[in-house]
Length: 350
Image (tube, rainbow, N blue to C red; front, top):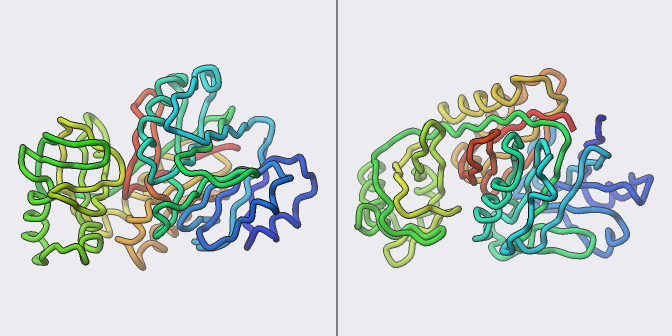
Protein backbone atom coordinates (compact mmCIF):
# COMPACT_ATOMS: atom_id res chain seq x y z
CA UNK A 1 0.00 0.00 0.00
CA UNK A 2 1.74 3.17 -1.19
CA UNK A 3 1.49 6.24 0.97
CA UNK A 4 1.59 9.90 -0.03
CA UNK A 5 4.83 11.70 0.80
CA UNK A 6 5.19 15.33 -0.26
CA UNK A 7 7.21 18.48 0.42
CA UNK A 8 5.48 21.74 1.33
CA UNK A 9 7.16 25.15 1.61
CA UNK A 10 5.37 26.02 4.87
CA UNK A 11 2.66 24.89 7.29
CA UNK A 12 -0.08 26.87 5.56
CA UNK A 13 0.63 25.18 2.20
CA UNK A 14 0.38 21.79 3.85
CA UNK A 15 -2.87 22.55 5.70
CA UNK A 16 -4.48 23.88 2.51
CA UNK A 17 -3.94 20.49 0.84
CA UNK A 18 -5.59 18.41 3.57
CA UNK A 19 -8.87 17.00 2.26
CA UNK A 20 -9.80 14.83 5.22
CA UNK A 21 -9.33 16.21 8.74
CA UNK A 22 -9.20 12.65 10.12
CA UNK A 23 -6.16 11.68 8.03
CA UNK A 24 -3.05 11.22 10.17
CA UNK A 25 0.34 12.69 9.21
CA UNK A 26 3.92 12.52 10.40
CA UNK A 27 5.90 15.69 9.63
CA UNK A 28 9.66 16.13 9.17
CA UNK A 29 10.13 19.88 9.62
CA UNK A 30 13.12 22.06 8.72
CA UNK A 31 14.38 24.43 11.38
CA UNK A 32 13.31 27.72 9.75
CA UNK A 33 9.65 26.71 9.55
CA UNK A 34 7.03 28.17 11.87
CA UNK A 35 4.80 25.54 13.47
CA UNK A 36 1.88 27.10 15.33
CA UNK A 37 0.05 24.60 17.52
CA UNK A 38 -3.22 26.54 17.33
CA UNK A 39 -3.25 25.90 13.57
CA UNK A 40 -2.93 22.12 13.94
CA UNK A 41 -4.79 21.45 17.20
CA UNK A 42 -7.77 19.99 15.33
CA UNK A 43 -5.56 17.84 13.06
CA UNK A 44 -4.08 14.38 13.66
CA UNK A 45 -0.42 15.37 13.41
CA UNK A 46 2.90 14.56 15.07
CA UNK A 47 6.30 15.79 13.96
CA UNK A 48 9.91 16.63 14.65
CA UNK A 49 12.11 19.61 13.79
CA UNK A 50 15.55 19.07 12.22
CA UNK A 51 18.40 21.37 11.15
CA UNK A 52 17.49 20.58 7.53
CA UNK A 53 15.34 18.10 5.63
CA UNK A 54 16.03 16.11 2.46
CA UNK A 55 13.46 15.71 -0.32
CA UNK A 56 14.58 13.99 -3.47
CA UNK A 57 18.20 15.15 -3.83
CA UNK A 58 17.77 18.63 -2.37
CA UNK A 59 18.34 20.11 1.09
CA UNK A 60 15.82 22.48 2.65
CA UNK A 61 16.29 24.63 5.75
CA UNK A 62 12.61 25.61 5.60
CA UNK A 63 9.46 23.71 4.75
CA UNK A 64 8.25 20.26 5.74
CA UNK A 65 7.82 16.72 4.49
CA UNK A 66 4.38 15.22 5.19
CA UNK A 67 4.05 11.42 5.39
CA UNK A 68 0.45 10.24 5.22
CA UNK A 69 -0.15 7.43 7.72
CA UNK A 70 -1.83 4.38 6.14
CA UNK A 71 -3.35 1.23 7.66
CA UNK A 72 -0.02 -0.62 7.66
CA UNK A 73 1.60 2.11 9.80
CA UNK A 74 1.05 3.43 13.32
CA UNK A 75 2.43 6.47 15.13
CA UNK A 76 3.39 6.13 18.82
CA UNK A 77 4.13 9.32 20.79
CA UNK A 78 6.25 9.27 23.97
CA UNK A 79 6.30 12.59 25.80
CA UNK A 80 8.89 11.59 28.42
CA UNK A 81 11.66 9.17 27.42
CA UNK A 82 13.16 9.20 30.90
CA UNK A 83 10.39 6.71 31.78
CA UNK A 84 10.56 2.96 31.18
CA UNK A 85 7.86 1.81 28.78
CA UNK A 86 6.43 -1.64 28.16
CA UNK A 87 7.45 -1.85 24.51
CA UNK A 88 6.96 -5.61 24.26
CA UNK A 89 3.15 -5.43 24.14
CA UNK A 90 3.27 -2.76 21.44
CA UNK A 91 6.12 -3.89 19.19
CA UNK A 92 6.75 -7.63 19.70
CA UNK A 93 5.43 -8.46 16.20
CA UNK A 94 6.49 -5.25 14.42
CA UNK A 95 8.74 -5.63 11.36
CA UNK A 96 10.36 -2.19 11.43
CA UNK A 97 10.36 1.10 13.36
CA UNK A 98 11.32 4.63 12.31
CA UNK A 99 12.52 6.51 15.40
CA UNK A 100 12.55 10.31 15.78
CA UNK A 101 13.76 11.53 19.15
CA UNK A 102 15.17 14.57 20.93
CA UNK A 103 18.77 14.58 19.70
CA UNK A 104 20.31 16.16 22.81
CA UNK A 105 18.37 14.23 25.45
CA UNK A 106 20.54 12.36 27.95
CA UNK A 107 17.89 9.60 27.97
CA UNK A 108 18.21 8.65 24.29
CA UNK A 109 20.35 5.58 24.72
CA UNK A 110 18.47 4.09 27.66
CA UNK A 111 15.22 4.62 25.72
CA UNK A 112 16.66 2.95 22.62
CA UNK A 113 18.14 0.05 24.58
CA UNK A 114 14.81 -0.57 26.28
CA UNK A 115 13.09 -0.52 22.88
CA UNK A 116 15.61 -2.88 21.30
CA UNK A 117 15.39 -5.39 24.15
CA UNK A 118 11.61 -5.59 23.82
CA UNK A 119 11.07 -6.00 20.09
CA UNK A 120 11.24 -9.07 17.92
CA UNK A 121 14.81 -10.12 17.14
CA UNK A 122 14.21 -9.46 13.42
CA UNK A 123 12.77 -5.97 13.85
CA UNK A 124 14.81 -3.28 12.11
CA UNK A 125 15.04 0.18 13.67
CA UNK A 126 16.24 3.33 11.93
CA UNK A 127 15.98 7.01 12.77
CA UNK A 128 17.59 10.25 13.84
CA UNK A 129 17.83 12.90 16.50
CA UNK A 130 15.72 16.02 16.11
CA UNK A 131 17.11 19.41 17.06
CA UNK A 132 18.41 22.75 15.87
CA UNK A 133 22.02 23.86 15.52
CA UNK A 134 21.81 26.66 18.07
CA UNK A 135 18.67 25.67 19.97
CA UNK A 136 20.20 23.78 22.88
CA UNK A 137 17.07 23.83 25.02
CA UNK A 138 14.46 24.14 22.30
CA UNK A 139 11.58 21.68 22.27
CA UNK A 140 11.68 19.96 18.90
CA UNK A 141 9.17 17.08 19.09
CA UNK A 142 5.50 18.05 18.77
CA UNK A 143 1.93 16.89 18.32
CA UNK A 144 -1.34 18.79 18.03
CA UNK A 145 -1.23 19.59 21.76
CA UNK A 146 2.21 21.19 22.04
CA UNK A 147 6.00 20.93 21.91
CA UNK A 148 8.10 18.59 24.05
CA UNK A 149 11.70 17.83 24.97
CA UNK A 150 13.04 14.45 26.19
CA UNK A 151 10.45 12.90 23.88
CA UNK A 152 10.19 10.58 20.89
CA UNK A 153 8.01 9.44 18.01
CA UNK A 154 8.06 5.81 16.87
CA UNK A 155 6.49 4.92 13.53
CA UNK A 156 5.83 1.18 13.37
CA UNK A 157 5.53 -0.54 9.99
CA UNK A 158 4.27 -3.90 8.81
CA UNK A 159 6.98 -3.95 6.16
CA UNK A 160 10.73 -4.47 6.49
CA UNK A 161 13.48 -1.88 6.13
CA UNK A 162 16.88 -2.72 4.67
CA UNK A 163 19.45 -0.64 6.54
CA UNK A 164 22.84 0.65 5.41
CA UNK A 165 25.23 2.25 7.92
CA UNK A 166 28.65 3.70 7.03
CA UNK A 167 30.73 6.63 8.26
CA UNK A 168 34.07 6.61 6.39
CA UNK A 169 36.15 8.04 9.24
CA UNK A 170 39.67 6.61 9.47
CA UNK A 171 41.96 5.57 12.31
CA UNK A 172 44.44 8.21 13.53
CA UNK A 173 45.68 6.75 16.81
CA UNK A 174 44.69 4.42 19.63
CA UNK A 175 43.47 2.29 21.18
CA UNK A 176 42.67 3.83 24.55
CA UNK A 177 40.59 2.45 27.41
CA UNK A 178 37.83 4.61 28.88
CA UNK A 179 38.73 4.44 32.58
CA UNK A 180 36.18 7.01 33.74
CA UNK A 181 32.99 8.28 32.14
CA UNK A 182 29.48 9.34 33.10
CA UNK A 183 26.74 9.31 30.44
CA UNK A 184 28.11 11.64 27.71
CA UNK A 185 31.05 12.96 29.77
CA UNK A 186 34.38 11.30 28.94
CA UNK A 187 36.64 11.90 31.94
CA UNK A 188 39.68 9.63 31.66
CA UNK A 189 41.53 7.65 29.01
CA UNK A 190 44.07 5.20 30.39
CA UNK A 191 43.69 6.92 33.81
CA UNK A 192 44.70 10.30 32.37
CA UNK A 193 42.64 13.40 31.61
CA UNK A 194 40.58 12.64 28.50
CA UNK A 195 40.76 16.22 27.27
CA UNK A 196 44.53 16.53 27.72
CA UNK A 197 45.11 13.23 25.91
CA UNK A 198 42.81 14.26 23.06
CA UNK A 199 44.28 17.79 22.92
CA UNK A 200 47.88 16.59 22.65
CA UNK A 201 47.05 14.19 19.81
CA UNK A 202 45.01 16.72 17.81
CA UNK A 203 47.48 19.58 18.22
CA UNK A 204 50.33 17.35 17.07
CA UNK A 205 48.39 16.28 13.98
CA UNK A 206 46.95 19.62 12.86
CA UNK A 207 49.53 22.05 14.27
CA UNK A 208 46.85 24.26 15.86
CA UNK A 209 46.43 24.96 19.59
CA UNK A 210 42.95 23.95 20.79
CA UNK A 211 41.04 26.72 22.59
CA UNK A 212 37.47 27.31 23.71
CA UNK A 213 36.98 29.49 20.64
CA UNK A 214 38.16 27.00 18.01
CA UNK A 215 37.33 23.69 19.69
CA UNK A 216 34.19 22.85 17.73
CA UNK A 217 35.73 23.87 14.42
CA UNK A 218 38.80 21.67 14.98
CA UNK A 219 37.17 18.76 16.81
CA UNK A 220 34.68 18.13 13.99
CA UNK A 221 37.67 16.79 12.04
CA UNK A 222 38.69 14.39 14.86
CA UNK A 223 35.81 12.31 16.24
CA UNK A 224 36.12 9.43 18.67
CA UNK A 225 35.43 5.88 17.50
CA UNK A 226 34.09 3.32 19.98
CA UNK A 227 35.42 -0.06 18.92
CA UNK A 228 32.76 -2.74 18.39
CA UNK A 229 33.34 -6.39 17.60
CA UNK A 230 32.68 -7.29 13.93
CA UNK A 231 31.11 -3.96 13.00
CA UNK A 232 31.49 -0.25 12.29
CA UNK A 233 33.11 1.82 15.00
CA UNK A 234 30.48 3.93 16.75
CA UNK A 235 31.43 7.54 16.13
CA UNK A 236 31.07 10.12 18.91
CA UNK A 237 31.35 13.89 18.45
CA UNK A 238 33.36 15.84 21.05
CA UNK A 239 31.47 19.15 21.24
CA UNK A 240 33.13 20.89 24.20
CA UNK A 241 35.36 20.39 27.22
CA UNK A 242 35.20 21.29 30.87
CA UNK A 243 37.43 20.54 33.87
CA UNK A 244 39.65 18.19 31.88
CA UNK A 245 36.66 16.24 30.54
CA UNK A 246 35.33 15.85 27.00
CA UNK A 247 31.62 16.42 26.41
CA UNK A 248 30.26 14.12 23.68
CA UNK A 249 27.04 13.81 21.70
CA UNK A 250 25.83 10.45 23.00
CA UNK A 251 26.88 8.25 25.88
CA UNK A 252 30.15 6.39 26.32
CA UNK A 253 30.59 3.53 28.78
CA UNK A 254 33.39 2.78 31.21
CA UNK A 255 35.86 0.19 29.87
CA UNK A 256 35.02 1.02 26.25
CA UNK A 257 37.91 0.80 23.80
CA UNK A 258 38.22 3.91 21.66
CA UNK A 259 40.33 5.29 18.82
CA UNK A 260 40.83 8.87 17.70
CA UNK A 261 39.63 9.17 14.10
CA UNK A 262 40.35 11.57 11.26
CA UNK A 263 38.36 12.49 8.19
CA UNK A 264 39.09 12.33 4.47
CA UNK A 265 36.25 13.81 2.41
CA UNK A 266 36.50 11.30 -0.41
CA UNK A 267 36.35 8.39 2.05
CA UNK A 268 33.17 9.87 3.54
CA UNK A 269 31.62 10.28 0.08
CA UNK A 270 32.44 6.67 -0.76
CA UNK A 271 30.95 5.45 2.52
CA UNK A 272 27.59 7.09 1.77
CA UNK A 273 27.41 5.19 -1.51
CA UNK A 274 28.22 1.96 0.36
CA UNK A 275 25.42 2.62 2.87
CA UNK A 276 22.97 3.25 0.04
CA UNK A 277 24.00 0.08 -1.78
CA UNK A 278 23.38 -1.89 1.43
CA UNK A 279 19.93 -0.36 1.80
CA UNK A 280 19.00 -1.16 -1.82
CA UNK A 281 19.98 -4.83 -1.70
CA UNK A 282 16.29 -5.74 -1.96
CA UNK A 283 13.42 -4.05 -3.79
CA UNK A 284 11.99 -0.96 -2.13
CA UNK A 285 9.81 1.93 -3.23
CA UNK A 286 11.49 4.65 -1.15
CA UNK A 287 14.61 5.43 0.82
CA UNK A 288 14.88 7.38 4.04
CA UNK A 289 18.18 9.08 4.89
CA UNK A 290 19.54 10.31 8.22
CA UNK A 291 22.76 12.34 7.84
CA UNK A 292 24.54 13.91 10.81
CA UNK A 293 24.76 17.72 10.97
CA UNK A 294 28.44 17.55 11.99
CA UNK A 295 29.15 15.30 8.98
CA UNK A 296 27.56 17.95 6.77
CA UNK A 297 29.66 20.67 8.42
CA UNK A 298 32.83 18.65 7.82
CA UNK A 299 32.01 18.00 4.14
CA UNK A 300 30.91 21.61 3.55
CA UNK A 301 30.40 22.13 -0.22
CA UNK A 302 30.99 18.41 -0.80
CA UNK A 303 27.76 17.52 1.02
CA UNK A 304 25.72 18.19 -2.12
CA UNK A 305 27.98 15.72 -3.89
CA UNK A 306 27.25 13.16 -1.16
CA UNK A 307 23.51 13.56 -1.71
CA UNK A 308 23.93 13.34 -5.48
CA UNK A 309 25.98 10.14 -5.04
CA UNK A 310 23.20 8.62 -2.96
CA UNK A 311 20.43 9.54 -5.39
CA UNK A 312 22.44 8.43 -8.42
CA UNK A 313 22.06 4.85 -7.16
CA UNK A 314 18.26 4.95 -7.01
CA UNK A 315 15.95 3.37 -9.58
CA UNK A 316 12.78 5.47 -9.47
CA UNK A 317 12.62 5.30 -5.66
CA UNK A 318 11.50 8.42 -3.81
CA UNK A 319 14.07 9.75 -1.34
CA UNK A 320 13.34 11.66 1.87
CA UNK A 321 15.24 12.28 5.07
CA UNK A 322 16.75 14.70 7.52
CA UNK A 323 20.02 16.23 8.67
CA UNK A 324 20.11 15.07 12.27
CA UNK A 325 21.61 15.42 15.74
CA UNK A 326 22.74 11.79 15.90
CA UNK A 327 21.55 8.75 13.97
CA UNK A 328 19.83 5.52 15.05
CA UNK A 329 20.20 2.08 13.47
CA UNK A 330 20.25 -1.60 14.15
CA UNK A 331 20.08 -4.55 11.82
CA UNK A 332 18.10 -7.60 12.88
CA UNK A 333 19.64 -9.08 16.03
CA UNK A 334 22.66 -6.72 16.08
CA UNK A 335 22.62 -4.26 18.92
CA UNK A 336 21.06 -0.84 18.42
CA UNK A 337 23.37 2.19 18.31
CA UNK A 338 23.14 5.96 18.52
CA UNK A 339 25.70 7.26 16.01
CA UNK A 340 27.35 10.61 15.23
CA UNK A 341 28.87 11.75 11.91
CA UNK A 342 27.34 8.76 10.14
CA UNK A 343 25.24 8.16 7.03
CA UNK A 344 22.25 5.89 7.73
CA UNK A 345 20.03 4.86 4.82
CA UNK A 346 16.90 2.72 4.85
CA UNK A 347 15.26 1.03 1.88
CA UNK A 348 11.57 0.90 2.66
CA UNK A 349 8.11 0.14 1.27
CA UNK A 350 5.71 2.35 3.21
